[in-house]
Length: 154
Image (cartoon, rainbow, N blue to C red; front, side):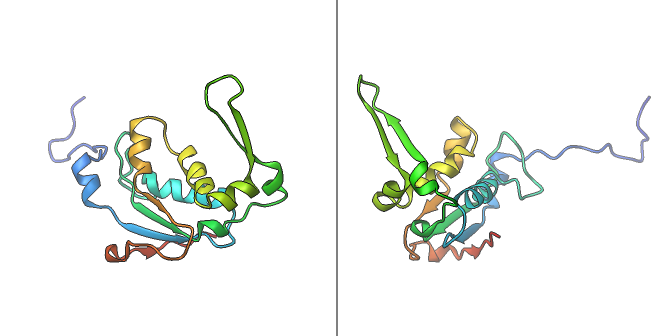
């Protein structure tokens, strides 16, 4: 069966690296009193580009995201004391554990960065997407020249 000569077949759109980089926007998110997981999932979606009709799984089609007031993010329930950040140095006895209450006091941006990066793809593509994330503990950021638009998270 051949296609009609007057009709072009439907083609699936696939983004290229050049077309994806040309259409990058900047968004700013205020994390004050918003749940950590809700912010992380919405920001990861924008970093991946899943909000765009040109989303392609193997190309970085996402936008830049600036998160301000990361130190005021909210953890629901008793997670500040019962949720722990664990790490291991690789040597015997090198296990260290820290509650999120101490982690947020010591490094207020780290918990949000870790949550967002955990929701991105693993490998080279995910690391490229993570470079477009800018997280600040205060409401000030040096990206005013990019004219970011506010991204509302419910």
